[in-house]
Image (cartoon, rainbow, N blue to C red; front, top):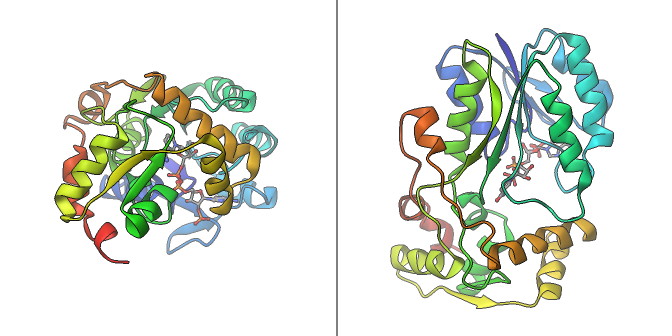
Length: 276
Ligand SMILES: NC(=O)c1ccc[n+]([C@@H]2O[C@H](COP(=O)([O-])OP(=O)(O)OC[C@H]3O[C@@H](n4cnc5c(N)ncnc54)[C@H](OP(=O)(O)O)[C@@H]3O)[C@@H](O)[C@H]2O)c1
């Protein structure tokens, strides 16, 4: 089976490509700047879609980033996928629902219209604490996580565990269909996550409450369009209200091994927060 992986350079796409290649699958890693064995793919350039889809039977779909309305770009792509003979689509969705984004639900419905479909709905990524993410920058620069989540908790998940589930469902021989809520092994608030990072780095890290307007401005400064930046902060409110406080056994059930705990992830990434 030929599998097209979009977002192949990203948090889930990169480990997914590696996992599928390890299984001997015929993987097509789609990226704006493709590496060896990859194909050029840009959501904003539909001319790249049909060549990337030619001969593919399955697609891992990472929607275009930073938009509340993915359908203008993804709708024509899914039509081209259907015409190319794609049978199985695995969508990277989200447990959190972005407020004011009906197009996201529409995308879920479009994916469900394929003969075989899976919608992955992961909780917050542990990777948000690393790299260029504003949460990571705050820890590095000030030893501080600012949020509007209060004491609300969520089941942080390592993106590699999402990729492991995606590899299972993309390479499963039989028909697949369903929605999977994916979490790590425990729910933690930012206060507890900050304590873990402080412990593994030996430097003080605290979680402090921030007004919504400050967080929206922070996201805009990080390069997000304002409507998307505001919707993302809306998720903080849902977390504060306990709506994301959920842990599932899905990663263990589908991959045969338990998901990575946050402490383990933080220990492995401690230099993220100790080097400027
Ligand atoms: N972060 C979280 O906590 C979280 C939680 C639940 C769900 N999610 C979902 O996970 C998804 C991925 O989020 P992420 O933050 O981890 O991002 P990511 O997958 O690490 O990065 C985005 C990917 O999209 C690619 N990309 C960007 N612009 C593109 C374009 N115009 N055409 C084609 N590809 C493009 C990037 O590749 P290049 O830049 O190399 O081209 C990269 O591979 C999002 O849909 C998000 O809703 C995230």
